Amino acid sequence: MQAIAEHYAKPVHGELGGSFARVNDFNHEFFLRWGKIEFDLFYGAQVNLKVVLKVYRQHNICETYIVDTDAYDIQWNQHKRRTRDFYIHPFSNSFGGINCVKFAFIIHKDEHSIPSERDYIFMDWDQLQGNGVRHFITDMPSKQVGACAQRAMWRFSLGNCFLRTAKLVW
Image (cartoon, rainbow, N blue to C red):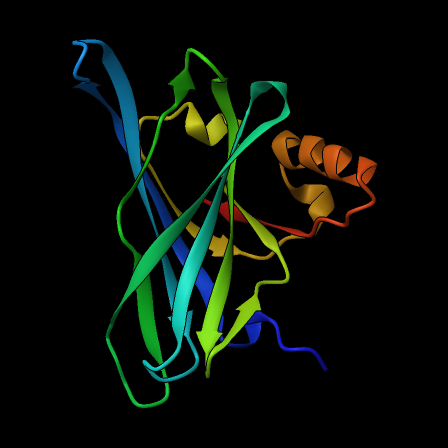
């Protein structure tokens, strides 16, 4: 049996904050939203976890980011991890608006990297339109996930890839 990251960890909570404005060096205003994801790990603190954040935009553009996590509530046989705050640019003049945000995760144990079996939907189109949402994460059959996942499945199926999804629910 091949090890998968879900044998060691489970995503349990996701949060996406409201939109706020920033100004760059050229005095152009742009907007950001912050987010974080929390995990329960079924192993001691010697296991590390990294999140692979996938931001899907218009025109089949996918931005991919690696997000570090920090351990807390540590016990000898389990602990919790939360990502450091990450920031999402909701609308880019170059790449358009966000359709959905997904993530996968990687467990680092004994000098081995173990990827998650699934991609998880962090926020879909409807949730991204809100001004700050908090979600608990549960597994759902792929036919019940939103239109964002269905579009992603169609795109990935063209490349002969199989995409498993889970959905964040209210």
